[in-house]
Image 1 (tube, rainbow, N blue to C red):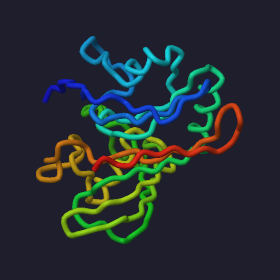
Image 2 (image 1 turned 90 degrees about the vertical axis):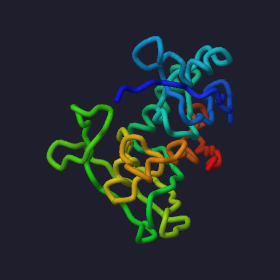
Image 3 (image 1 turned 45 degrees about the vertical axis):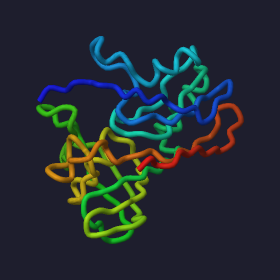
Image 4 (image 1 turned 30 degrees about the vertical axis):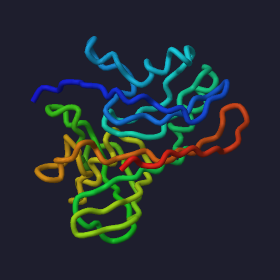
Length: 215
């Protein structure tokens, strides 16, 4: 099935801006950075560039995921923030709606991941060649039909939360890659980056920014 990029018309919301950093709420259905080809040029960083011409990438969210992202506005801030992500010193919390009832109330998935080359951009569990990936979860509320959880990734692999939940047998609702049948039949991927904590690159003070889930 060929992918047709139809970016959302919803605009990003600025949560915080100073001379070093920019924190925004990314809408679902928008690439973080340009894809290959003119048809994939519309993206979050380009929409922000008009107001913040020195904007620099630090990390990404999947196109289908909404929520909090931080950008750097100076090379110093980019180096500082990128190092925090690489060293796992940032704290990220996501909200997701999952298929079925997830038990127990808390736990951790520890399954190594690697790109599924014949089926890119899909990722898969590979105990021999995969890179370490860990995700902690905490159930917020649950019914037989679905579970609302907070997910705290320890590592930051591509599609990590989506694959890990699918491997538990509880795919994220609306996931076009890892959910099937009724679990996939939702208007969007029910995954939202709710909060992000990191040290400010100038002051060194730990700061937290959040945006409530729109679902």
